[in-house]
Length: 604
Image (cartoon, rainbow, N blue to C red; front, side, top):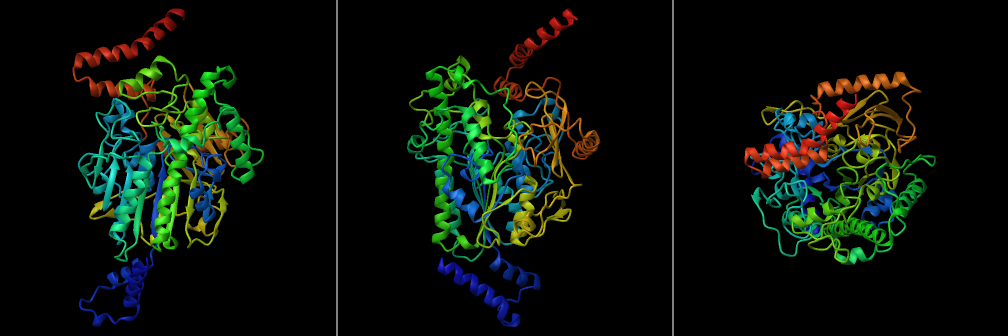
């Protein structure tokens, strides 16, 4: 907007040309320096998709129409080797603080933590007071700070985003919720817990998540657009977290696209990713054991499965469409050229949807919450839709695994950094980068230094991430040297990155409980285990992982831990207040394992 640019230029002129003694109130040198800097600092928009797979964007090889995000890719840099946590809350903790999730208090989502782990202060699944958010640092440096979307980092005293540096907020505190109305999506929650500026909030009647969150972001920005101060807007979408839902007009565009099944889609996306230069031409691609045989399904089953994926694609496209409205708003206000936009995902594709949509559990679970799974209304208001592990594997093509697992499909996601001020346009970066790098990069754009051990009179954890600015300016080929290591753990699944290499541990039933070694630059699909060829490298990296686990106080999971079963157990403990009922239900859950153990002992 002309008015805002005039104010900004006036501020800069005053700072540069008006003698300090002529001002009504003489500022300190620090204040004067900050005034000049604020006038020149860019706006920053951080957009976070939820459960978006590696090749779910056209700019990364997808068939889904994402013109807004594709345009951003052409106006900046696409990262092809960017990694995040394999589920949401740990990723968000690292994204917003630059600190490892275990240190920040969010080693896993709280809904999935075992009681043995919850006895420890740093295993609560909520953002600790020992870290400072990027929003807090930017607000202290003169930025307006806004958030509209999923928070999932705590809702107790001092834990909501309005108390962690965000000036204006509308936030979903839970792991997910319905996209059409204010209702929970799993029985763990009594209701969908939305908050606005720290107070409980009632969603409007015409709510659809992607549209609503962009509307609120525009509203927040517009409320202070005239004052000349830059803004930081955090926009964490619900798309494409379950329940997967989308408007009918977007669904219609994708009907028939997925009739060939998941294997065909996975191969098609791999080929397109090669064509775009996202992955090497000779990249291998395995097939997950959880991928079903498309040809073994009857016609009705294939029809239903194809529509499940069509709704998923529609939800991605709807997100892109509404993000486009935010871009159009920034352009209309004359702010787009002074805005850096960062787009990424919290983790890889979600694969919790049942393979058999018509099974008793697949129908009864949603029905218990008042949802239906009817084919004709799939994805619309009142519908509960998911994609199964088969299509989730295609969403992550050509990578192995998906959300929750430390394989590339769970951790490697799109990252696009765009802005008119960036010197490089439409380029790819194949350098390794990690989710903890986002906060240091944002601070660098804003000219704000990270805290040096203390903030606001209290000690805070140092950031471990790296500023990606030198990569964006093509001043360096990588920000991590071949000797630097980055460790990772989630509920017993583990990885460590060093240079072009990664060691990976995934326990059963999907994994084999053994460490593997991969060159993830040449082999992003993790198809060629190098452990036997390079045992010395494997041992060095294992030693580095042990140091990581020790330094970050990583706790072992209880024997027999299963993340989905733990969510069920935690739900039962919350729902059943009577100790006798809790004990009875616990016995029923554990009984099959006890029987199997006794049978094994008898056969020995």
